Image (cartoon, rainbow, N blue to C red; front, side):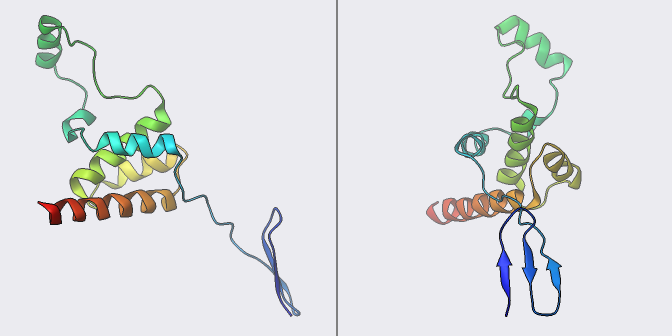
Length: 129
């Protein structure tokens, strides 16, 4: 007879041996995180780069100096970056961006959830056009 122990370590007990099962990482995003993903839909890929000297000069002349879509929270900024790239390029994004996303505290499962959701939305948007 076998059973799954859902306590801290998630172990699988069998009549012969006890085997540690890998813990499933959280694959959902919070409401705030989904809001960041939705807002990233409107951002351009160029928003991921630091502004150049000309942009800074024009910003000072026209009063938009220092304004950008960058988020103050580094974790949410990593989410915004990967969401912008996924909205524009689908799954074809640089591995360093996925590494940055994971380094910010997200899991690959969360990336897959995000990318699948964006992919469905992109498909629906293309079908409606």
